[in-house]
Length: 558
Image (tube, rainbow, N blue to C red):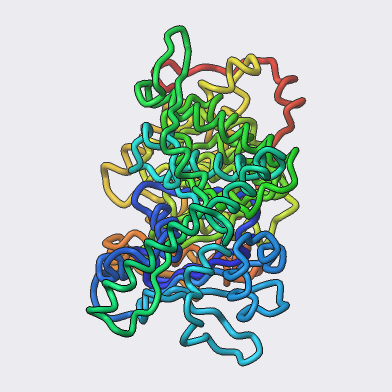
């Protein structure tokens, strides 16, 4: 059974977010943008623990907090349930359907409602004992968050990742063991059979206790002691992990990197076992918060491959990260989501492959020196310029050569450093600074005397930019004042928008999505000209390698 849809409402910074996960899911975003909040929401769906007021959106009001999850593979999960009573309880509710929707909400956090497809309503009340049976039915939820001490992760127990994994593995191993089957038969013979001497003595004690308790509670007619077979996770509590890397040492005493590596190794071994065995039992949901912590990039890639193996074996994996390593590689069952907080609200959206270069650019800290081999660069002043042009290119010019848009945060000095970073990376690779004569810059018209002098100094430092038509200066002091007539802003309006930066960005996206091609090309000719020049100068890697003649250098500029 796996998750096919997640809907979160009014949970922490998430007012509303809906996603359709795949088998392997990666969530990226800056700190404090809400990645962990999504994982905590799933954890709350499973446990129902915590004060609603502490995680209600805005921490005020009475808005309903809800987490709704849709699952597929219901019938397969039913067949894997070991407890017949629990299976029967679930079967009565789900019938023969193979998908279901369940939700936990602040209206009654003690229960999880099931959606009744036939009636088109949420069941207000579940059968007695349903919630316990539902826990037995759901995939095992394993949440490794950054607050868990790493030494705890490496211990065996039902509340640790390793304990949960190994208990499932041991269950499969032992259930195929003849000696274990004999052990279970002996256990039942000793404690459950009516012919057992032990069972007879336990019944005598129960009868004696019944006599005494009936004196206080006359309705009590029978007390019986039942001895259940010990659970494997209880047996694992006494186990420890020892690592010999020259000196045999308990894993809890190793460094953070070694402990994360141990987790990685056990995940790989678990994935191998699942691939080879067919009766491991119900599926896991692995939620790993900041999976790259304490790991070298090489180990991060190994971790991703291990988690990918786990997901290929049937378990579902959810990872949130700041690591470009965990994002860069592409897989058919992988889905990447961008998590952003805009105006204090977290939004979660799936990204498509063509967005990945920009995503990796952000994860690398916004340094063009970390980008590899785009066809060309277009440098703009701010995030709103980037968002606007991204929409324009995607809508109107999808067949043009791919270019990387770099925004310089409205700082001409930052623009100069950006150009220097590009040349610093690519000059030694191709014997000469190939992007130096190809990248294109769009900047605003100077609005102050200082800004005018900065631009003049910038142009004096790099005169070839004007000569080669690589520098394009708007006729206005901002992109918003240069928009097409139906969206054009005044200088005062732009100043007002700067008080809330997300307003400029939201408007840029809106304008980019709604203006027509005719409006853009007729009313924004400077921007169109810059794009045309950027595409004109775009080149293939073979062309780059053939450009051997060095260009004149300008000492003190780069």
